[in-house]
Image 1 (cartoon, rainbow, N blue to C red):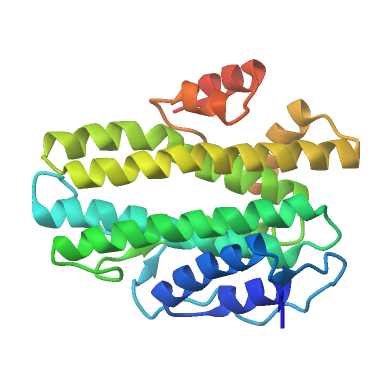
Image 2: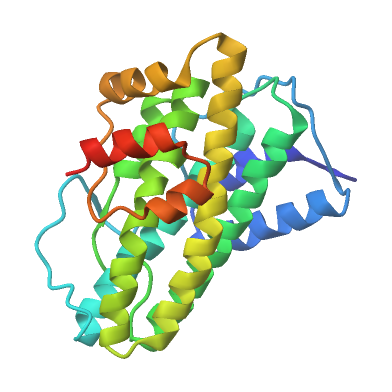
Length: 268
């Protein structure tokens, strides 16, 4: 019997085991590609009381305690890669949430975000495997909860979700990855650099998906994205971008010249 795509995405979002969630997200994408999953875009699904499903560890905090993250020590490198793995795990949840939460959208929307979930799951798996080679696992370090906090804040505002999660928070990864790769290369961790190459390549596409659906929502709602986006950032207190900016990757992800100029002006 074919899977019901959006309820199944919600079931995966509620799953607590991180590797099972990642594996099943990739399996759901494969089922969709094979025509083995059905989409009922019109269905309004009731929201469970506790989302997302998470493992007992890592411990989540609003401000992380200071811990050495120098890539020139094994412990510091593991802490750095754990932080990225946590972002990728959260990104699986963010994508699955988009699939189940928002009814009545074009089929391409659900396919786009299901693909994102599968690619984020791949990233998480690559990082977790590499953590194992450093004597650590996902959950060994405390982690920040900022990504899901914004997801929750925009749970009932589709346009804000598209504006502030993929094209704001996830876009920060486009900026942060190249400097991090330089540090890891200097520390001699070629495998970590290669993994981040995969992540950066895919994240350009994920931010582009956010741009696509944000602009679609603006057209649907009759608003100007050039004025709407700053208003949403202010309303939801979105963090400002930080230098150095990866303007080339942001341009590939679909930011306009005007948007890039504003991002440069606002960057800390």
